[in-house]
Length: 119
Ligand SMILES: [Zn+2]
Image (tube, rainbow, N blue to C red):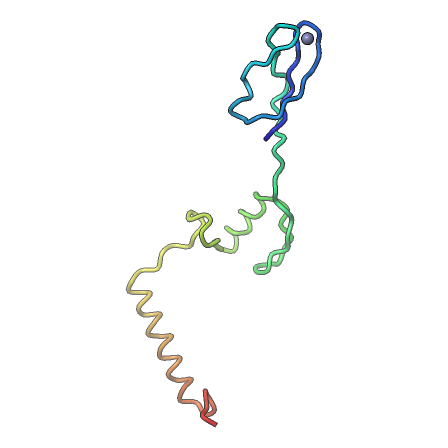
């Protein structure tokens, strides 16, 4: 939860209160009067930790913006994360043709000597 500061208009005291964002404007009292919200601090720190990409140009990615840019640049998608980043869906026909090609390639490999040999 973020930390908010409330100032007393009568004595000037500043009180820090940790509360839910939705509750930030809920009145607090000091010296018998309502305090005023002083700061609406974005004290919610990012949990992003810099990392080196394991693909593409293997650059160091420092934040969410850089990560998104990198993903777009190398046409990458995170499974189960952001569907808008995913490459266009392959048509049934294209998928079937790719399956057949993969099957043919596999058959050719099996015809080679010493592939999955019994010895
Ligand atoms: Zn006061």
